[in-house]
Image (cartoon, rainbow, N blue to C red; front, side, top):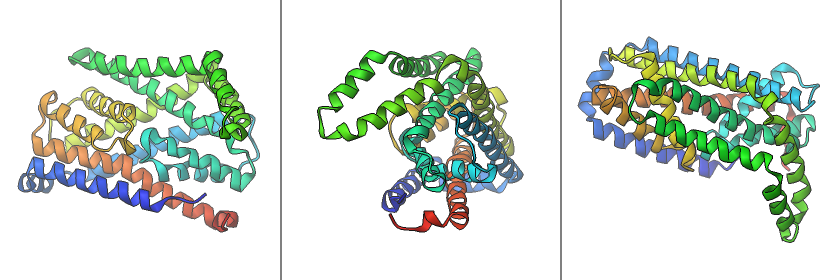
Length: 316
């Protein structure tokens, strides 16, 4: 239940340095001049759209809990537990969101190995949704199909590992011969739960919710570009946002830091024809409204949970 605050602060400092580098690259004076004419109401709208995305993702969390037969959790508690996972959004591929499984275990006694596969299923359906959005936007862009193919390949590899039992069982057998053997029964349970969550019949609703959620964040970038009076369509903005997000997810760096920002900025400038200063500002603002806002929401949710459940404040 303990958060490694040192690592979190380190990631935060890396983010500050990276964003500072982008500001220098774009030119501080030009960036400041661009922000003077920015319609700040569009940033508030971006925050609102990010929150709408959280609502869709929460519905997906609830759906998966029902699929696993986990009940008896009040809606407010479930929402706060779900949002608390955002504290570790800046982990590679957001796998740190498994933290919410630990929180659920402490507050309601649900074994973490039973719910941790939800995080994998969430990431799988997110990638499928992002690939679908990229395919939709790639019609008018050169290179769009490349990113869609990479995403589809990642999904394919994931499905092969999930549903082809032979390699998974081989890994479990090898692990039983090591010091890790005490954890193998839990891993087998988690693997079985993941197969249930990733079955074709269980994918349709979560993927639809993910498409809506990620679409909201793509529209958030579109709104920010409008705030800078830059001519880019909603489809273009969603394409730029999703390809950059996919790249950040495929490369194992915390929160996609550096990768997502650089690719988004380059696409806005080279493909979208957005002014460099406006491209940098839009990229920074959409990352504040999505990545870093999620972390703030996560800490607030965790604080609220601690007030409701004293067990979270006790030392293990």
